[in-house]
Image (cartoon, rainbow, N blue to C red):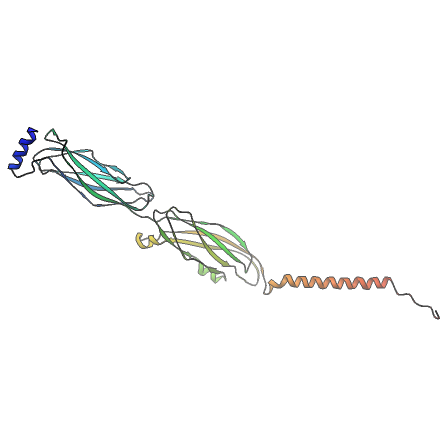
Length: 298
């Protein structure tokens, strides 16, 4: 204590800080961290520890990173009236949820000019690590191949997954809709967008279709290209992030105007044929059993 007292008296006389202390400032105060697949997932802030005293100080550094992995020096030495810069590197998990984490850097003088300081106070500096949002999606077709007859209504279902790390809206369209409609397909999208939580179960999207009613025999293959696009990617990332899923539609069969009446017409024709056949049988039976001829006078 006498050593500190003597040093403090000299320092006070010179108008400088009489007790060991340090200050810490870090920049940038906001650390962006990309966590999409393939990203480095790291961010760095640079901190400067400043010693305003006449002592050579040993300073311990501790960091709390809000659940993030962190790398930093545990001890630095700062000369009298000098400063020292050190790095704090934080690392996020792959695909971790978008959001912010508070990073607190704590510095405390443990010795000054070789003399331990157990009562020296600690100082803190805080920065913010921002886990950046990224878009990612996946599309699956319930039926990649389907055979249909002409003039037939059918509903196709597609599963859209949000594999990103934040809430996102996905816009739905049919890439080759104009081509299909030129071939007399009728297409309806009951829903043109959907909002999905990250890593949530898939949202089912429906495409209502009616196959062409071209007169005569049809035997053709067609492709339907379903596309889902991340709205966040269009708005923020600068490049649309989309997935396209193609299905094959095989249209085979015959279509004739009034073909729907054929079953009832067939029944009528069958009934008429049966009635005619019955009359023929009755006439044939009568020819085999002629009526008795009465003798004259009887």
